[in-house]
Every structure is written in structure tokens, then in C-alpha cells.
Image (cartoon, rainbow, N blue to C red):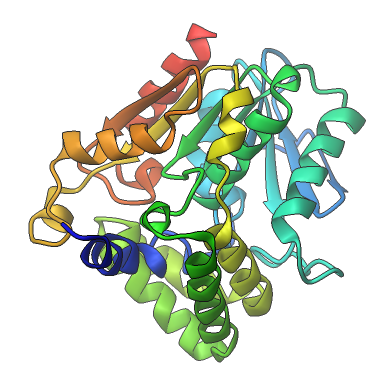
Length: 310
């Protein structure tokens, strides 16, 4: 497959899928919040009172709702910090409108310092997974490990084009998304959740309507910055255990140009993480981008297995 065909196939399909419209739903979890606050551009909730600390970072437009089952399981034996990025899930957008990934990274560093969190494990979904990998490359001595749930150091397909092309593509996506009305934003979220987010139509219908809780302009900026970035060089310093969870749903990869087996998709992800000394990819199927919603039991088994191995 040529570069152009690959990009317009795999990356083009994921352009609005894996990054642009992760439905930001209100979290109605029943877990008790031990503490909460804001550090920099992050809002956090703390659950649990003992064990290794885990910081949960949702993806684009996400909030603690995406980790509801994960928090319920982990808080029994871990101190869990569930964070929300500014502009997502009803949180006000950052005052500084650019450099949002940098602000999130700085805020994670401040959260660990101000809350005196001893070598936590970062667990991020989608854009949150990208942030977790970036942090592992920048501050490996401060964490015990990183888990990226369908989040990568470079946006899928963007590894096949140069930095100038990535910037141009990201700018077009930013302009397109920022111009959406709230109604268009919600409609796009429903389409995303139905076709890429989850396998279960009921889950799609449950979470997609709450997309409008996130700020459209901030979401567009985060998405564009994610598509522009390439954190692969940083991973050479990420000398901590790194787990990448790769969801796979066979019907989505049954026809060209997206014709990939489960093994081939996992191998592609492993290649993007080649610079990380201790990176491992685990595939979970059948599942789409929100693997923790499609396969909660399998996801819990893989995540707790990783945490127990540290």
C-alpha cells in the first residue's frame, strides 16, 4: 500500500474517529469522592485511601465517567486520581487557548508534586494515553509505569507524512471542528460513537448526547495539537513499563484500505512504540475505541494484571 492510500485510508478514517469526537458525557457514578480540587488546567477527584496511586486521564472531551467501572475496581486497593482536562466534560476552557497539551503536561507534573503522589501509574485513554506516554518520556523517574488505551505517541497514519503535512492536516481539522454549531457537534458525536466509539448501539446512544458539555473550540485545539505531535523520540527516555491496549473489532478492518488482522494492528502499534525500552502491546477484542465500555471484564483483567506486575 502506498503512502497516500494508507493515509487517506487508515489515518483519514481515524481523523475524526480516534480523536475528534470522543463523547463527553456527564458521569453519574456512585463512587464516594475522598477529595477533589484543581491543579493548573486539571480538575481531579480522589478515590480510595491505600495502595499504589493511579492517575486516570480520559480522552478528548472525556471525564471521569469513562472510568466508572475502573474506579470502582481500583479504589479497593489503590488511591485513584481521576482527572478532567480544562474544556472537557463541562469544565471551563483554559484561559490560554493554545499549547493545551503542554498545559496539561505541566498540570500533571504539578498534581503529582502538590498532592505528594509517590510514583503513580498513569492510565490514559486516547488523547489521555498520548499524554501518559509523553509524560513517561519526560519524567520517567516520577512514575512507576504508563498505560495507553488506544492512545499513541503519534496519531495513526501521521507517521507516514512529514511535520509540514501533519500541521496542514491538523489545521484543516481544527478549522472544520471549531466551526461546528452545538447541534452539529452533537450529531457528529453520535455518528462517532455508533461507528467507531463502541460496538453497542445502546452505549452510543447513552454517551453521545452529552458531547455538548465540552467546549468546541478547546476540543478542536486539543485535537489539532494531538494530530501535529510526534512524541516517539521522547520514548527513548521512557525507561518504565509501558502498556498499550489495542482494541480490535474485525468488521471495521475487513475491507481495503483498512484491511488489517488483529495481529497486524497490534504490530503496527508496537512499531510506533519501538523507542520505548519496556513497551508491550496487548490486543482486546471484540472492542472499539472505548474498549473499557465494550469489554469491561477483559479490560479490567489486563489493567489489573499490569498493575500487579509492577
